[in-house]
Image 1 (cartoon, rainbow, N blue to C red):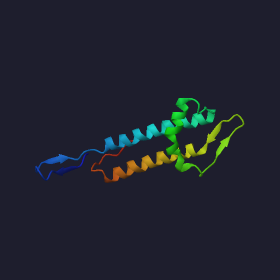
Image 2 (image 1 turned 60 degrees about the horizontal axis):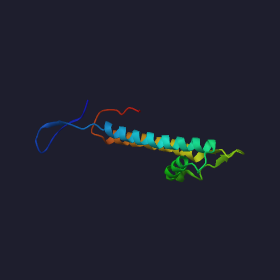
Image 3 (image 1 turned 90 degrees about the vertical axis):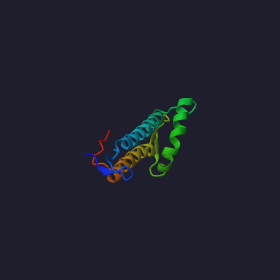
Image 4 (image 1 turned 120 degrees about the vertical axis):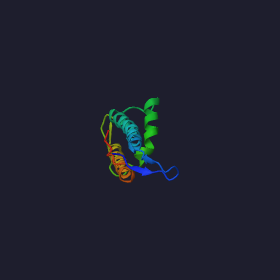
Amino acid sequence: MATVYRDVSTGQMVSAPSAYPIYRVVYYLLDIVEVLLAVRFIFRLIGASTVSSFANLVYNITAPLVAPFFGILGSSVTNSGAVFEWPTVVAMIAYAIIAYIIVRLIAMIAPSDEVPLVE
């Protein structure tokens, strides 16, 4: 059931807008970030070269997303050059938690009785 309020300018009862589109945008942005970070993680794991323009593009796009998490945990390097990049894993978890918190905060202040669904 949506919240109903009286519009001051017209005096009519109006249904409050749902915050659901905002939830969708937050989760859509999270999906984009998570996919980019997952591709980065896989590329680093298989030792993708930065000579490849696509791999270099992914590394450059995701570098600012992962930068805050370097130094928390180190990366594990194998003899073949593959890197298990823990900061990328931590970043993926942190961004998922941040998105969830944003959606919950919006749910608390949104003028709607609807409960957001996790997509």
